[in-house]
Image 1: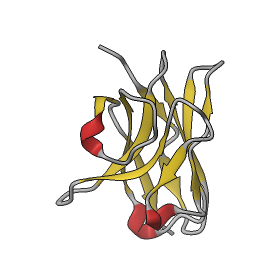
Image 2: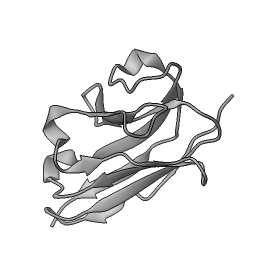
Image 3: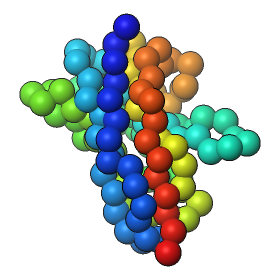
Image 4: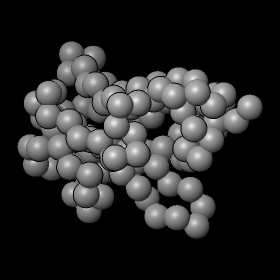
Length: 120
């Protein structure tokens, strides 16, 4: 069972930035998702095996990026201009395949989640 270890959550003011990290061994399609009570798990961003293959949810385009560092076995979610409604538990996930996808069913390994709170 692949273990994914997330870090970097916390409290940030509206308009601020936060970077989440996910440690992952091996080559997987990687995604970031968020989940809040009463709602399903929503896709945020994904990156394929090629680092220039990325896709984003419409709501975060231009504000979030998902870089990966194979040498250090890390995937990140850089979040800028955060909004209060983006307070959620954020999860990284690993999936099979080659290309970035926002389809949650394509992911087979999940991290434990990290809380992001956007509040003044």
